[in-house]
Length: 143
Image (cartoon, rainbow, N blue to C red; front, side, top):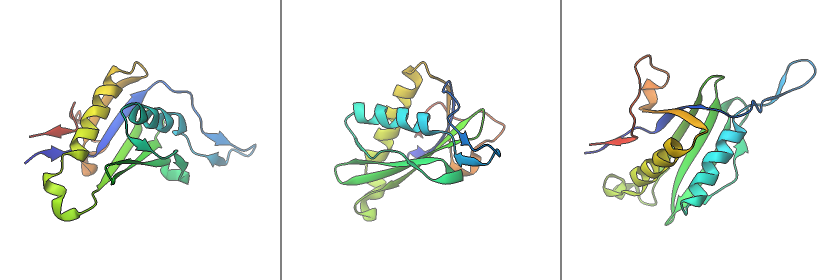
């Protein structure tokens, strides 16, 4: 059975888009540019993608849909690294194990991120291994 790593650590060159008021209070958390870039990549691949929405300290999230199935994605800006968290919502959870939609989407996204010069490192991890000291996996799916 395939192992799916739903989270990615992304090292990328994007301008800091966090917005603070004159007192240094955060009005809008960063990561919007990265979320919009990932959403645009997925749209180019033929997926339906909702516009990224600000989720305060959690970052920016959006939904990707294909064939009536949803994948939720959230980009969080942690300073030097961005975290991409994903979760799959198939139409019928009974068929989740035999469904290739999610692993295919993550694999296609990974290839595009690695080909995009704005992203330098892409490490895929299980949710409990995010920000672990050891390097993550190069691929989101392994057998």
